[in-house]
Length: 250
Image (cartoon, rainbow, N blue to C red; front, side, top):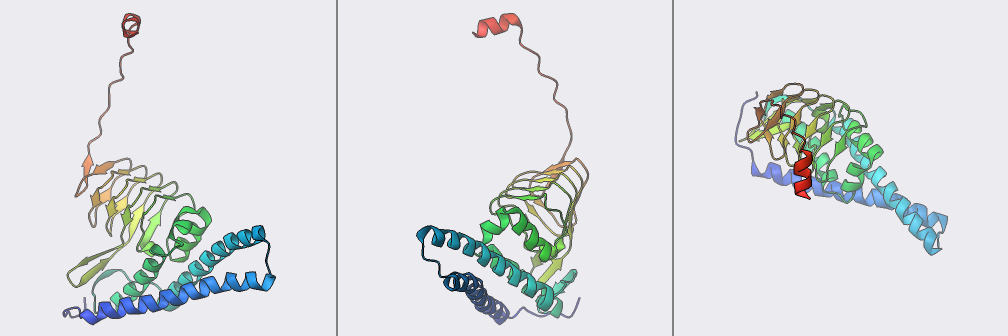
């Protein structure tokens, strides 16, 4: 890790200011393209205008998403893993990539992208994630570092859950991968930190916090803050009520 110093306050100001400028430009380009197309076609009928508006909204989302992916892949590039001071060039690369994802998360297209299968797949794959199209994201779920996530098939991420490939402690950021197997359920509002491995068929309970470097084995159930393994147990099969009991019950 490079030599440290205090993180200058202006660094965050510059990052926020640059993000706002970029965000405004992205919105302008994203909406300008479909509006220009509608005007060029000379659409005037109310139903045609409604249809054009719906298609235009989808088109704006695709343009917006494509611009973010283009910037990540061509300008920012690959984000390194490890522990870095926030003032280091490697951390700057993470900050830039992180801001691109944040722009999508707070955009008016967020729900459209996250809840439409092919858009979700194209965006997160374009940002570097490695998973199939069979994963599901609940409302408000966040993947701040999609490039750090490898996921198997049929993974369900609950509402407002966060899979974070970073952890900031003081002026040091830790960046690491998150590996998730097949048929995994991550409960609502759970938080998974970097360096976590989750085996096939595992379950992370709602509101749980899976700390950095944790390994969850196949089929295991973890819950709590910090998350701990819940030992397996079997419920005895419930006895069927007798005919007499049923009669007495009514």
